[in-house]
Image 1 (spheres, rainbow, N blue to C red):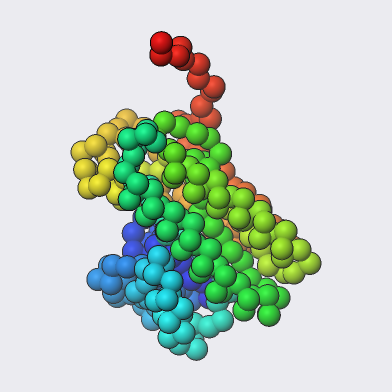
Image 2: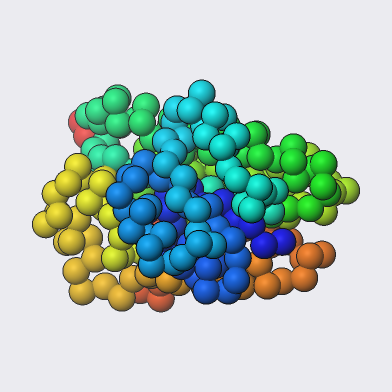
Length: 251
C-alpha cells in the first residue's frame, strides 16, 4: 500500500501526517479547504504530494473532486480521516447551535460520506486501511465537551462497526484517540480565533504534538497486514482520565 489520502492536511495533525508519509515514500493526497496552504505544502514536499482543495462538508463537491484525482494517485490504499474540529466550550444550555451543527457536519457527516465513497474500491481490491482521528473526548466526558465529545464517540463506534462489516476482508480500521495536544490550531478554532485564550490551555503543560500522532500512524502502517489495532488511546504523561466528580445540587 503506497497511496494515502489525508483530510485536514493544511495544518496540525494533517500536515504532520503528510510530511511523515512523504518522508517514508508514500504518495499522498492532501485535502483541505485552504488552497494556499496546500500549495505551499506541495512546494515543500514535491511531486509525490497532490494538493486537493476540498471541503468535506460539501457532499456534491466531494464526489466531483475525487473523480479528478489523476491515475498516479489511484487507487487509494489508505484513508486518514483527520479533518475535524471543536467549537465552543459552553455548557449545553448556553452553546451556539450553529457550532453544534458545524461539528456534526464535519466530524460525523463529512467523515462517513468520504469513507462511503472510498471504501468500495478497497473492498473490490480486498486491501486497504482506514484510520480515523477520534479523541479521548469520545470516551471521557468533560464540561463543555457536549457535541464535540458525542461526535468523537460516534467516530469510535463507527470505526468498530466498520471492522464488523469488513469481517473476512483484508481491510484494517483504527480509531486514534489523542488527548491534550498543543502546537496546532485546535484550541484557536475552538475559541473562535482567541489566541490568548487558546494558549492558556497549554500553559506549563508538556502536551502531545502533531508529530506524536504522525509517528503513531507511521507505526500502525508498519505493522504486518494481519494485525489490526482497533483503538489507540494516547495521552501525554501530564494527563490522566478524570475521576468521577460529585457536586451538591442547586436548591
